[in-house]
Image (cartoon, rainbow over all chains, first blue to last red):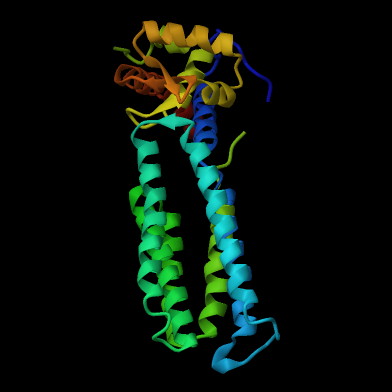
Length: 210
Length: 107
């Protein structure tokens, strides 16, 4: 679209209302972080990370693909760290476009994720040696996914965003189903339902205009 | 202020209507940086400055110059008065539009 530097009024009220709607949608889209950058890194991390876990540590100790035992968790950890860095940078860059209560809210929400995950992993690290490997893995994965689901639901409540709330509820409930299904199945469910949910959310969450 | 037939001259100009429309997205007390606003509106910096000054004179926007670290940063927000004027302007537009559109529907 060409730049308009016009001091004249528009001819018709309908055109004016359309102009108002367009400029509002443009600024909404320009100041919000692109949901693809905020959700796809996590969706891919869950899909591939937990997917590898499922293939190597399947239900009832089955091995679908004979990968080195260290590989799936290492890949998952690296993908999660990458996702954390990407969303941190994209979120911070977006927050610098505005100043005021909304950007403070965003900062607090971002810090909540970091601090909450730090707290939960500190707790879980105490139990790593006490539980059999399978159960320890389920504790870590189930706990972290439950926290992610809860924070997405809280985000939905904070910004009155129904889609984000649904993503959180979906993540939480499929996580519970996976925990009941047991080790192995949990990885598969988190990879497909959880990871897939975030990939889908990144796609539909984008405001459209221009 | 408006009786549905007269439109606020300050924001009747297309460029200023665009500025106020974009700013109306922000929640009260939220500000946006000048470069982001300029980018979103696809205006030149000079042109945006001119229109912001007119809006500022009318008390519709507030322009704050501050610093982000060492670099100077300019933030813009819509004042309560600006928001009210914008809402009334929209009401006036709808009032102008509605009689004709209801006639079209009945014909």
